[in-house]
Length: 252
Ligand SMILES: C[S@@+](CC[C@H](N)C(=O)[O-])C[C@H]1O[C@@H](n2cnc3c(N)ncnc32)[C@H](O)[C@@H]1O
Image 1 (cartoon, helix red, strand yellow):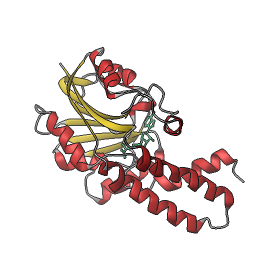
Image 2: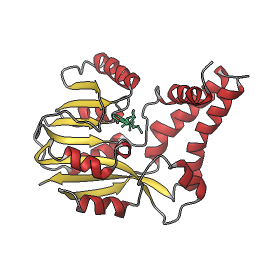
Image 3: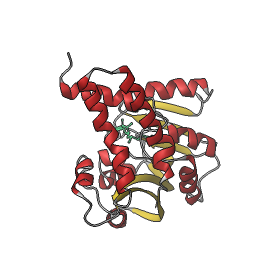
């Protein structure tokens, strides 16, 4: 029998892995951010950091004619992405890799565009800006989303839910980190509410309900599902307190 923490992780993966996205976002926000990257070449070389199962990787493949290396350190996400890439006949353009975004091994000046939705908090924005600046070509763009506080003193329940997001600050705090880096800000915008729900929390809630049926009578599994279901419920009550911001910066 798995230990409670391992059980929780297993059920967490069972909920998240099949979702359309593993975090907030949408095709229209990806397009809005991409439109800010005005001077990209016709077929840019793109690096997608923390791709998950590749929701935004496929948006980038639709919205550009470029090639995309998508990296994630959770092997099941990359296996699912590889299968979907093969099913869509995109093997020439999308190259999924199991790798650690904290240890980039790419050649200097390899990419026109580096993209990351909801994954940089694992290494921190300052570190991401430092690590990936040399890997971008001069004039290239780095577009990323980051969880931010929208109010100065959010309720304890919300703070506790983000305790793993070390260094989470406001949009102004991220702008100060960009200002202190070798990048220049192009622009930033807040993800709209539907980016949390349409492809993320609504499918998550349906998945949780399906798993409640599968685990009926299993008190430990049901308690794990209850805990996971608090995240969308909290967002419904407290979306004024926190959000996700899309930032687009440029290597001058
Ligand atoms: C919140 S999910 C976002 C996934 C996807 N970008 C999306 O928006 O649907 C964060 C992703 O980052 C990946 N990740 C976390 N730490 C990582 C690391 N050090 N290296 C590579 N991927 C990492 C996780 O496995 C997860 O798939």
